[in-house]
Amino acid sequence: MTAFIRLGLILWALVQAFPAGGNATPAPSPRPAAVAGSPLPQRVYIWQRVWSPALCRSLRAHAGEFATLDVLAAELSFAGAAPAASYAAPDWALLRELGVPVALVVRVGPCRSTWGPDTAEARLVLAAGARVLAQARAGGVEPVELQLDYDSATSRLREYGGLLRQVRTALAPPRLAITTLPTWLGSADFGALVAGTDTYVLQVHGLDRPDAPDRPYVLCDPGRAARWIRQAAALGRPFRVALPAYGYRVAVDLTGQFRGLQAEGRAKAWPLGTTKRAVWADPPQIARLVGELLAHPPAACESLCWFRFPCEDDRLAWRWPTLAEVMNGREPRADLVMHTCPGEDGALDIVLENRGTNQAAPVPFRVNWRGAKLVAAEGAGGWRCERDGEGRIVLTPPAGDAAGPVFPGDSVRVGWLRLDATVVPEAVPVAVP
Image 1: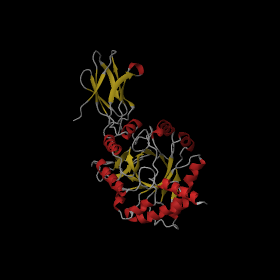
Image 2: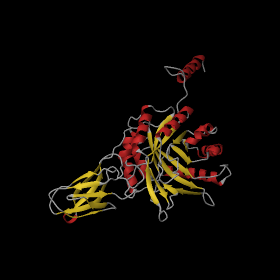
Image 3: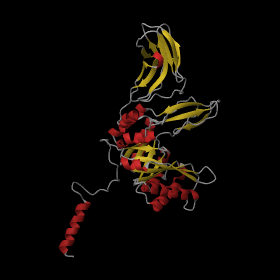
Image 4: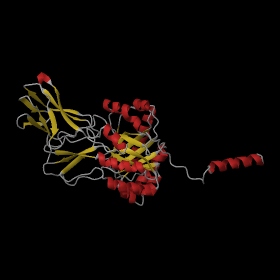
């Protein structure tokens, strides 16, 4: 090689190392493409084990609003005599059709393992990871990431780091991510743990358990969440923020003792006498937090992640109009309207409708009319109907959370009435003291 050629190659290398406009800086970690011009990309968890027609319809309608779909692929349990794995059944053909990047999530249940390479627990994690990666690829979907969702004890993060090294070596995932708890941020072992990943997901919701049946329970405290996010940003490692778009059912027995939580799936068959109440992530509060994050994206924050994807047959998740508003930092508003429409045999059905963008607890309504006499009236779906003088009835929803929220777009028949003349009743909310 001549001296002239060697000099040319050296100059070319210098140009690549020091681009115009400043000194060389380390290449930033890869970031997902932004969605709809958002300063922070937004992802969403798909947590269903079985993909229903309703979920598939919702995905076709709204999956394109997200930078990445984080798909539950497997759950590992260590509660029995031997470790066990159960696998979800994603619709790989649909995911391939949607064309949105897909990350695979393996949920790891509570475990006391040391995660050594010779342990059955570590072998199951590796086998499950290998299987879900192979399943996705066989379905024509190339995953962009493998994510472990494991709530390790803070005192055992060093052992968990050993498991991550095994996953990295044995599976060579495109990217490796883990979910993390805010309590881990102050651990001396946290830095080394996340150094073994490409990114981590900071979960800021669903962290506390109600300690009394009637005590207020906040699924996500925006003030605490903001402090944890600032703490994570100060560490300088790439991270994401997991935010809630769901609710819990809190179960209490006859003595008033807390018996459990349910955040997903079909309603559990609790023992006789168990009372349940719903606790929801508050959309306006979360919207204000999101607005702040979008206006001032935290350092090293890659994206926001929503748990979980809205679907009409998931009664414990927000509906799409609510999530769409909150994703943009706008506070959704409910708009409950009661009206009548023709029913059977000349009766008028009484319908409660939510024309807003936020879900709402049902409230009593008074139905008024003039120029006709009441022949009969009755509530439906647990609603109680009572006369309130001449030309008026009051409809009251079931006590507690029995009726559930009225989601945006919901139209619920709550009763009927029959009048002796054709008139159009008017319905107005009743002020509740």
